[in-house]
Image (cartoon, rainbow, N blue to C red; front, side, top):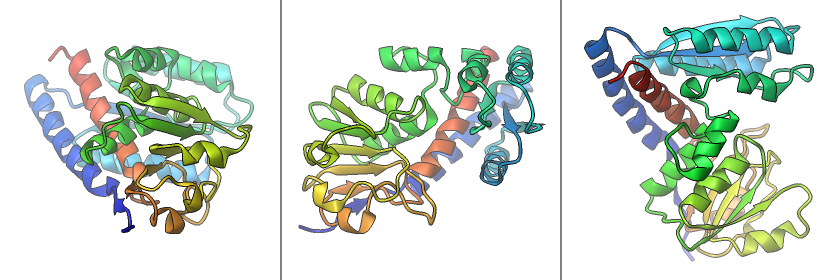
Length: 282
């Protein structure tokens, strides 16, 4: 069997950002207001600081204003909730991104729920999960949304296929499964307590790895011809899938880096401009 075709998230994300920049420029010209994304960071986790800075740079390139709110590591849940509610009420802010992790002393769910759904461009609130699950208008979780765009770009129709999602986080695994289900895939969720994970993966026509364990999914467990989407990112620039062995059996596979990651940010920027358009009534 020939090697899998690589699903190039970098190239697709570049195209989405270019289209988003055009929409942002048009919106700014028509309303006199540029789309604005507020990023909120608690503490100074080096990876988070780098990630937020990268998002700010991408915003600039897409014609989106970026407002950064840096809070000290000792910020309480109540203080963070207050900040997010202020941003939610600010008409000059169209989208809000709360960077995580936030520290064990923060009630993460309470913080997310302080973001008004109209500005939840990262798709992290209960309301966003509900609209995703029911196929209603709203904002998708950015990484799962990016995954679906990649599947569409490479002509992968989930309808009737068996999809196995390895991971059940509230902003990645669970919404990824719901978006696949909405497209008529038969979805199985697997996780750290799944008995015989290999057996489940071997049945999958589509594998979404989103568990955060380096090279957990082995090539020998990939069904020949399956589509493999690796949403994991671990130390050493490796994903949750053992790429070198999986590429020999899959038909399509995402690399790490350069697969799902760029799509996450592209989806965030696109949803920010969409949120601004809705709020500005155009």
